[in-house]
Length: 222
Image (cartoon, rainbow, N blue to C red):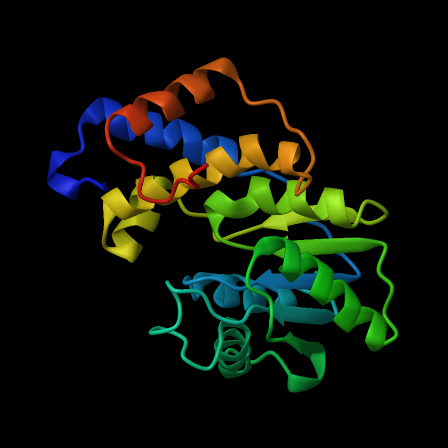
């Protein structure tokens, strides 16, 4: 059960910041053949995708994502559809955007975007994944597993945990989500969904402490 913001201790927040920093890949951004904006509840993905398009980092942008229980009310016509519309409003030309409106998880985001690109005659060697900050590492690991022949770079809005939580409006929920994503980083390689990544001991200890404190609302259950 997630904690209310007022019940989060200073130590718990420091532990969450440790996980936050680990999730972010800190990749140096450079031009790529294509970008893929991964669908989610966070419109910041579309905003960051538009910024990077205007910076000249890629000529083609795929928005991918259907709906999930957490996004149906916010994006009733699907994550990718709403992201595309927002990017158009930010000046990204329609001719630069491909739409993948069916994916319901990160693996499908990658696999179906790859197919959409192939159908358009695009076989990239370099891909920029644009996602939520705390999803960078899991997205990277998923893409390396499912699409090992491409070079993957990750990007997200350059926000610290405090600013991101303030934007979401629920610090406890954000901690739940970053804890849940770290569990997936650790568990998904064994399920064949992602490549293995080393999790430093102090990051794992912070994760275990947060779970024990009740930040378990986004954990996958056995």
